[in-house]
Image (cartoon, rainbow, N blue to C red; front, top):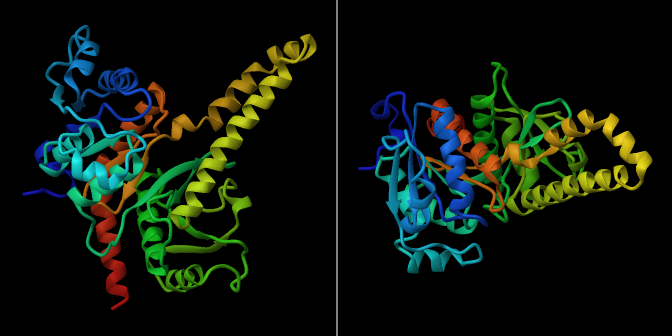
Length: 352
């Protein structure tokens, strides 16, 4: 039987993750070093490394001291980044992604991490792990930096191209739970709907109806509408939208970040005068780069599932992959799925 909510009692203080080592653009060459860094930093961490044994083993031969905390699980097949989810589900029963999810389903691991095909991960995770009661479909949520020095949670980022008013309201509840679970103070997160204007008459019917639903929910600290130019202001803690809008915002943000950094670099290296100025302001530039670097926010949560699944960026490097691993550990510690179920159950009772 699948034991929900990560079997925290059975695992005691240990945290056990199943990592799909074959996903993403770099596979084991990046994922294994990140996993070993996580093991060095966290003595309570245990890992199932899932993938082709011939590719994983060479990275482990010269790493003493972790043999009791590493479990290699062979999986012959790999789901390609451009493979259709329906085909991956039907034709690859021995894929590294499926086997990593099976470890969570069977209660051997408390969370799954993959940098592989997003659509396949979402489809397989939903099929194998199931959604929490009261939740139709999972949503992808990630953190964006804001000008107040914190992070803003945004969902959905691509799991649901369209979303009904009821789904948007559920996304709001899930995002609120995650933000509250991960924050350091006891405040209630503010939640906004992303819209084309702040006026009540603007936006699609689904957004207007979602606003009405959220205004009547005592469990959610609803802010109102938020426009796209306010996303990075830190005005609210959670921003809710459909997956089509959210994915475009995320990709545009990543593109703008790279554009700004490249332009600054070009300007400061254009001649000897600007290179000299660059040396003087180097600490400021390095702090700026660190602040806007998307790697530190890597690891999108698939909220609404019965267990914890983290999607790492396909192009994630070692540091970014490590960030995804640590995010999974934090969600285990804070028991995020259990808290989402409790919140959604209370919301359903309010609507009776």
